[in-house]
Length: 387
Image 1: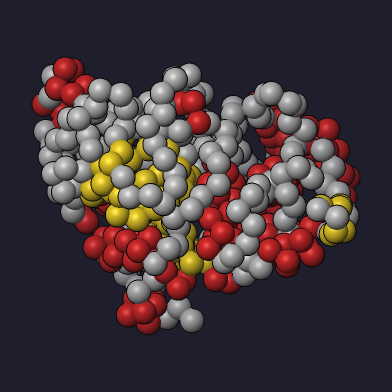
Image 2 (image 1 turned 60 degrees about the vertical axis):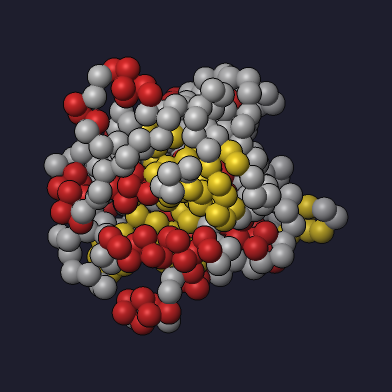
């Protein structure tokens, strides 16, 4: 997941991330009227800037909501760049061991964040901000090109390599661009290491599972999802599409958020308009009819397992972006939409940086999800042999 979008500045805000049941809409002068079904508490929308680090922004937003659910401080702001800084050496190791025949880029997956928490801990944003200058957004273009050049030389070397030497040079570059991770720090009057801080947060990495729905592998068994940014070869549980939807709705209805990896490259995905739709007869619509889809509710396509698989197989659906699903609404015609928290800043649309994704869009364009295992219905936990 590595989607990059620069937000467009707008003025009005028609979205409330609180828990009040009220009608909402996607933008000014829109006829959409959304009635809230469920909306879990979440932290403020962040901005990933000119980086492909949506996977860590969405994951930490997910875990911040998890910590709120667990009764922790609602003002938590965990450090995305702590995750990025710890993940890059792991990516580099994999890339070099594969002699350059692997992914080494900004992207990653939800499990990369969980693995960093498990092995390295966590720190607050104010302790480690990745050398972010005040008033600016992240920009990793130069850093990424420098790091890739370093590991390419090692991976393609015809001579015997020195692991300690190239690791040191990589660490020096990462420290230059992101800063050195503190071994200890004081936060709210208490001294921590990253591991002791993570322990106090109380996140158990073993509580979280990754789920998908594709027919090129057996259902109810885990498999390594074949997408470039799954450089760590993490497995996901495979379920039929209707059960994927059941898991998502069950999670939200019980107060659990959802890490959502999806394709957002389609023309009917309109973050600026606050909507991700899958309209019927889209390809046959005029330009004006397409624009009107984002002003007035339109019928959505019926998604099948077969059309979803075909879109994945023919590269129409790809692993573009990681986001955080925080709730459910219905429009005035009874169509269901998921409330999606994005990481492109609050000014990118009139929904404070959130948007609404129709049930059809989510069924069609989901790559995978991350949920707490208690968010999975018990019968499905048994089918998947999740303890």
